[in-house]
Length: 380
Image 1 (tube, one colour):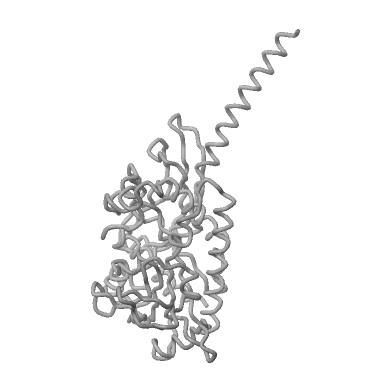
Image 2: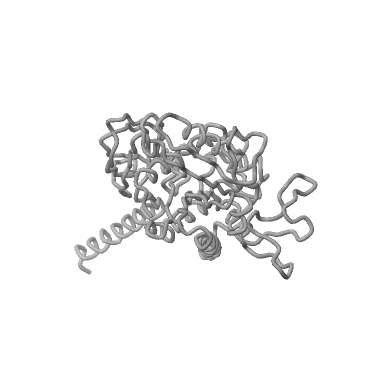
């Protein structure tokens, strides 16, 4: 037997094993960035490493972010832009292993919008969401930022004004709700009255039709609850309740579930477009989980885990970018609400998916910065 040939085969076998392992590791990271994200002078904005890759141990990797503004820290790249930074800033992210080998890389653009964008204009805003919106902290933060000098004259629409809502703040945000719930949920007995627990049993957009059967009627919602004037912008932050119960170990099942969810999203957006042809939709990418398993244990007692939801959430973000991205001509925009949420200091110890005040404010800042960009661009 030719020993040189044997040695060559052995080296090749080892090479394929190593290369295969590296490919699996590279694929498993699934570095995911939106085409663009947004910032405004004076408003802190960060990209948290844990939120853009699929790994249980982001601390084992090196994240190298190249941008002509901002700085890199242990867990994030961060910037508080100055007025002179207004404009587009190319950004690249490279993820390396401990030995410095590049495993994944991606690019995005940080768009810094002048702090006076939209000054003096009118803005009618409708905020839709689940329990993260119901908490009202991020809508309050949006209102605070919009009330700073150099901003539009804003009006928040909506029938839900919790006790925690600041003056002028309203929305349609309800704990446990999904795209499907806003499309079709209706209680024939209570209609739009609250139940005995003070919860809304029916979608604010669903009414009893002439035959008594529930029907999605956004035009009626606008007539009765918006003084007949449609919103300029409809922001939506959903996805957690839609997908939380999927099995993270079955990617086909996860994708099938997400396909149904995105189908519901398409139906809702299409119906709203028919009722409000000039409105634009700011769809927030579903927020990442608390980095601590303890938050999930406190809520779900071992039934659901942090890593399970992280895998589903990461896939949902990818699918949202694939299906809803690059549709600005249709008035559909993506808001990267997931990038700027600190998965450590933005969450309490005892909650898996609901941020603390700091985290909610970061979500509010992401929506605000997108709004400023849209007010400047004012694209149809």
